[in-house]
Length: 124
Image (cartoon, rainbow, N blue to C red; front, side):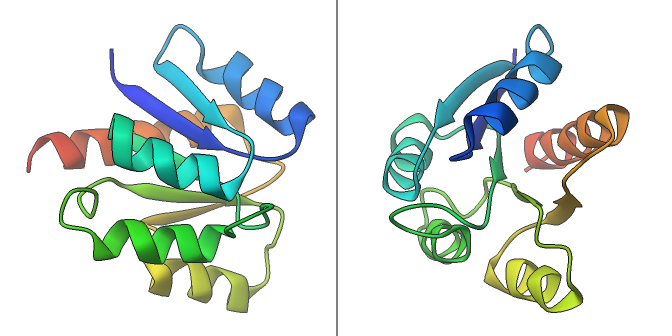
């Protein structure tokens, strides 16, 4: 089973994501940017769902750091955020996120996006 790391500081959003993904993926989680970046480095998940507004290191900085490392640059990062303005999307994509999904999200769409990036990542 493929592993999805959710980096999200809002408990309700975290629980919703876990509920939606449970059984389909091995789900691990982090509630702040520092722990999230450490888990990217240590666990090397197949994909990361990344909130942009986090305590500690924000999602944009996490993306930049993960993509700057040879060990983690291949891991797809999916920005999962309530920040839906075009400039937020550009910032996330320019920082290294592969995709941008706005909250609230459609369950099927989120799962399709995860599967697309896991599939693309396994071809490498």
